[in-house]
Structures are given as C-alpha cells and as structure tokens.
Length: 278
Ligand SMILES: [Zn+2]
Image (cartoon, rainbow, N blue to C red; front, side, top):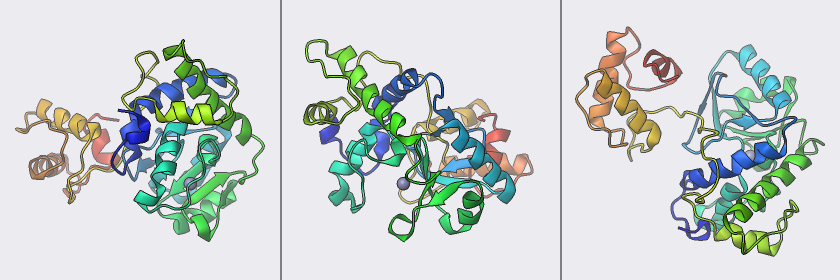
C-alpha cells in the first residue's frame, strides 16, 4: 500500500519503511550516527517510537533520568520523513493541527522528544540542556533549543536517506539526492510502499518498548506477540495472536506472582527483564 493511502491513526503502520530509511540515515552521518537510548530507564507511550538521538542529546537525557530516578515515558523521539508525511497529510483527520511539514520537524534531527509527564520532567531536562517548547506544544522538548546548529545536517540526511532508498529501488525514476523536499520528492514519498521497498536494510533498529497491559481496546502488535511467545515457552497455555487479552493478562499475573513481583498484569521494564526480554 502507498504511504499516501495509509489508514489508521498510528505511525506504526509505516514501520517497515521507516527501518529502511533509518538504515540509510546512519550511512549518511558516519561520524556521529544516531544512537539508541533503549539502555536508559525509558518506555514508549505508543508502539511507533524510534529510540534514536544524537550522542550528546542522549548523554544529557541520561543525566536527567539518573537524577530523577524514574521511568521516562516517551511518546515520540526520532521521526522519519515517512512518519512526518503520514502525520502531515492526516493532521485534520487525526485532530493534530500543529504538525510541521515533511523534513522541517526537529524530530528529524535526533534532538527532540515528546514526553508524557512533561511538567514533572521539565526541571530535570532543563538542567541538562533540554529546552521545553512552551504551551503551544507542551509535550515537546529539544536539546539545545529549536535553533541547535547540529539540527540541520540531520534534517538533510533524513531527506537524502529517502531519496537514496527510492533511487535504489527505482533506477528508471531517479530523484536528485539534494536533501530538499521538492514536489517530486514529496510525490515519490507518497507513492512509497508502507511495507518497505524490496531493496533496503530493515534490520538496524527496533521501536522503543511500550508498557503492555490489558486495555480496551486491546493492545496489539509484534511486541505483544513476542511476550506471548515467551510465556508459551514457559508452558503457559495461550495463543500468540498479538492481542493482549484476558488470557495473556492472567498469564502475566501468574508469572509476576511466581517471581514475587507486584502481580498487576502491567508489563514494564522490571517484568520484561525477569522474562529475559530485555
Ligand atoms: Zn514534538
């Protein structure tokens, strides 16, 4: 399916295409690639968060988290131009009017985070160089502020990465690799397959883990399936269908009880670690 026709409300729908773009991005910035921050005390608020930052932004985040000594819930970090395109063309439908145009968001620079508990984290992040955007985008923080001089080269790489990926797969319809979102690049982006192109590395990065639990509607995804497969290996009787339903909830509570954890059915970092999934 083409990106311009992608349905739903979650940018996770473009995750396979994202992985190919991200692999290309890091080839373009070999001296200071985007680094994963999954080793910090962080979880995702949704299922489409790419846990990537520039190195110094990650180091500052680490200090803030260490100081507060709490789990940080991140709703958005690195965002590919495919995700940005999805959000931009669906902004009215999704009720999110403040979406930057493709290639213009600081989320394409590896210097931005959207934080769920923004008020609580504000003083800690600010102390280490993460600036709050303000009430008009209250979840948004950027390292070194919106004018950080290290932003631009990454935004250009975000676009060039797509242009190179497109050219690799469409040698008869080559885009100029100029790092600029012109009408041609925008049109080709919209025509790109959300399942990913036939050529391109998809192995480089996994989304940040979200907290899994029983919700209405049920949480669904590959992360749920992986959890279920781990439970099945431990002889729990359930199907790995990718939906976190009552059977999965009961199995998790039993597991937590057996391990002397709080048996609340909430699969956070502690439970994941005890299951050997971190
Ligand atoms: Zn943001």
